[in-house]
Image 1: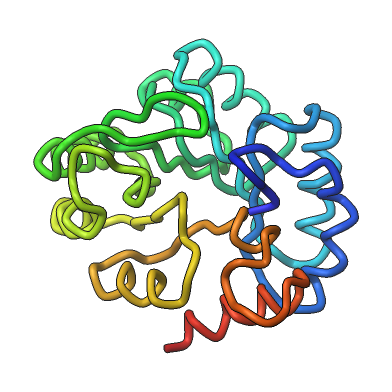
Image 2: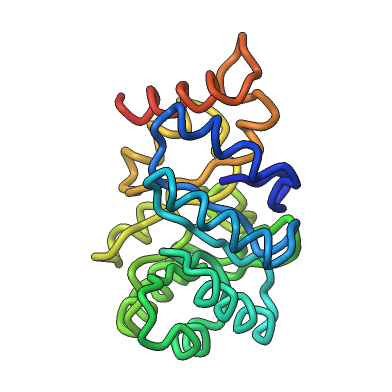
Length: 217
């Protein structure tokens, strides 16, 4: 994710070339931090290097969720993550090719935290799947009512679609534990830009290479 502190970084377009050197094929950004025109150009650049483009909705307001879904369709991202108004977002996406992954549980604030029990998360996952969502975007490590791994396991048990874990993925150990708990994918942003994922080299490319190495173990 071309994001830091839950906002798209202002130099996102400059970073694409660095990412292309690493071979990452899943690149995303938030619906805040840059204007829609920049988001559109960024989506084009992501597709140009052969990657899938992800837009993650930060807002929990229903109208703003729908606005973000309209932007997702307009700029042509492949996947829309987050948001809480799944029914209206899906209706807005209509027959577009955008796949949708809502937040299960009770996301609040910005940077977003997550309330809700494993039981609630599992219930939401089942409901979203029945609505036609491709999976969920789980803020497991932002949770304050439950343990992250308990939420991941609960979501996995309730879900046949893809389980993406978002937020506070900041070490190889965390990647390994969320994978063992059943996650299919994860988002990472601030840990890369802060040079925190691996020690010894704070540059973006070595940090991303460290992420890919962690994914292979």
